Amino acid sequence: MKISIIGTGYVGLPTGVGFAELGHQVVCIDKDIKKVAALRAGRSTLFEKDLDKLLSQNIQAGRIHFTDSICEGIKEAEVIIIAVGTPPHPVTKEADMKYIYAAVSEMANCLDHYAVVAVKSTVPVGTGENVEGIIKDVNPTLDCDVVSMPEFLREGFAVSDFFNPDRVVIGTDSERARAILSDLYKGFPEKTKILLVKRRSAEMIKYASNAFLAMKIHYINEMANLCEKVGADIGELAVGMGTDTRIGNKFLNPGPGYGGSCFPKDTLAMAYMGRMNGVELSLIENTIQKNDERKIEMAKRILKVIQEIPNAKIAVLGLAFKGGTDDCRESPAMEIIAELLRNKTTITAYDPKALENAKILLENKISYADDAYEAVKDADVVAILTEWDDFKSLDLTRIASLMRTKNIVDCRNLWDKKQAESLGFTYQGIGK
Image (tube, rainbow, N blue to C red; front, top):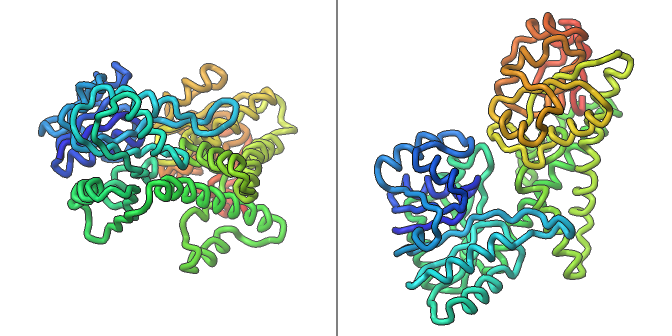
């Protein structure tokens, strides 16, 4: 099948490479000429496990191509996937649809044959109708079906999630479009659930899913706070909860709050939808507020440890919003660092993959280390802000010998408290 994908970000690129790996002919489209040049040369513009390897082998096989021209990219396409960003509006915090609508308008002006236009970006309920309206205004005689096909790719695991999805959601009443998209997913594991639903339901499923997971993170963080007060252990509590099949064990890891490109913007957008429709979404509104407060609370914990130390130095391990990705968008680490800087602290940071993206955001406000051991040298506290597996295997004895004052604020519960204390550290985890 011939597939065109507009947008080569954390959704579009893994999706395009994935379909190419399954044998389809794929053209990925992006307005960023430098990004297109890099991708043509086989250089991935984002970090995802196994993405580089699959990108190279599918370029060599001639199954995936890249262009900065929508008109060129959609020629003969049977399915056109819209995967451009929907960032929060700077004022209302609703999903900003200008990039979606601009892409659709340009696409409609070029398209001269029937195609399924699948909106994979996370969009408000009713977007499908708006896209249809734009297409009709631009190209009144065009025959196409607009469907909602939301993505459920976790950053850091996008390639694995693409090939092993929990479910594929297709929102449309068109039997023709359903047949084409069902055929597109024939190469997936037999256990893959394909849900054929109304278009508005598909748009809602994505938002409702992300909002629920964000609330689950907020809940376990509140339980961690209570565990600290009553002498319980959040790790044991999470196991006890997670073995209940009605709850499940995912998203029960306490930490500095959720971040990234999805949960913050999607909860804000859903709260806005609720207000615009006169529906009180109190759980989501509270989750947003408390998640913001959570990051300030983590910064205060770090500051409290060094309040009596003159000219204290903080070592930060982890800058990405979670392990497995180089994405620093809405990263709790970024916001915690911002709060620390407001208190005029000295910070040296390290992240295995996200250093370059962090430098764009933080510039020269902090120092950057080439590895974790360089970051902790002469530090008075080490703060773990991202759950990289690399950090679990660090040599605590070596770290103890490098630090000036042995304090740990482990916001991801990666290190063993007893081991740390046996080496002379003052250790503070979450929910312990």
